[in-house]
Image (cartoon, rainbow, N blue to C red; front, side, top):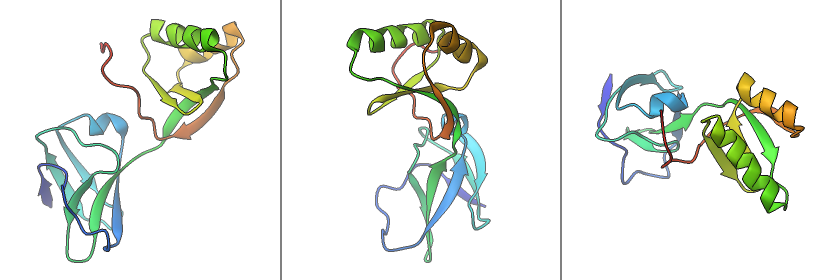
Length: 141
């Protein structure tokens, strides 16, 4: 097992990439274990949490990169109506759920409470699986 303490600052872009698929909540931790798609095992004892896409190890034949797993989310198209978009953000925030704003889409975890809110308020949404990168810096419970 290879031990990782931080992401690589420099790595060879000419080497093949081996993905190490990881859940989003695991990426928030500093100590965990993972296995790359080629079976190589890693132990993580990090100085800071890693991010999706971070290169963490390089061998003579490959570079190992974090690949955040898809998770169930609900997507809502924002459109061009600013008051409606602001109200949507307020309603989701009032439930204390994190959001991701990607282009003209808002993503939120697929949760029964959020589905109920959207259905009650007549907000059209799409259920799908995506890599979820919620906004940071807000209040966390």
